[in-house]
Length: 366
View (cartoon, rainbow, N blue to C red):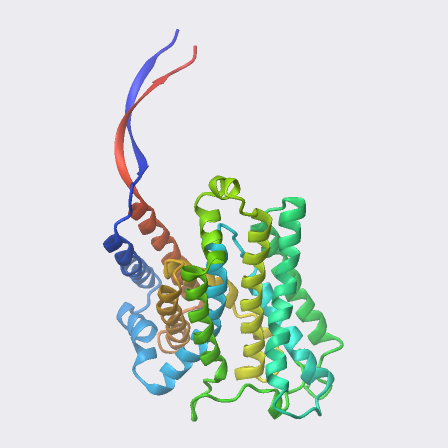
């Protein structure tokens, strides 16, 4: 005997055209929702939500010393996110920027570690070049597995990040360990010429931030004005149509991953040749993962990514402040970052789709 019944179920229907106003409102709405949810979490944890809000979201902008640190952290986040966004728009999901960042730092550190007595203004530019080369080389492993063996680039790039972290541990606990470093896992301190010059005196902001801004402009020109950027976007939006038009999917995957890896590696090189001044295990601070949030929060648009990178950098500094002044654990800061991404993706879904209630009929089997 069969029984049939009907139910009204919600269905997401794609909009013919997403509203520009709704698209622009999605990030601030997501920020508001994430803030409210996390303030509720802080109440449950027994923390003062007003003190946490002040320390995390306001204090980074209230003094030049704090804001200069925000600008310092904006650099790597912005650079990595710009590279990742190009691949994301082509539907190539590079989740391994953290590993590419580490390899960039390792490649760049080779010069001051092997040649600690070298001098000359050529050292730090060469270090940045080697960092970009290292990140691109690490990303090329993911591209090879994806194109030649049809492996999922998300899993491959993510697993390679774990390998990169272990490679860093091996070097700092073995051949690159500073013999005069009191047994700490770190390299020798870099010489003066191996450091990126300071951009603003009295701060730690260096020339790499200026380079990052220039490369952000290049990313905008590449994605908005160049034919290659257009092909990548078409390949992401309509892969079958792109195939019929003669666009090469494998080439798009290689290009997307190499750009992302190059940007992440350059950021890693700028980090060791900038504020750190040596290769440390703490070089892996989650920039590669946070940049994914930055890229999506910026709508995968080069200009939007600049704003979201600045906000995420402020959240980094504000999180450090909240850990001191409000006794907030670091995990709570990571939860805020993750909930912000989830809230944005939900908001973006309602920008692109509308919710309809439809009557659906079901028939049970005997």
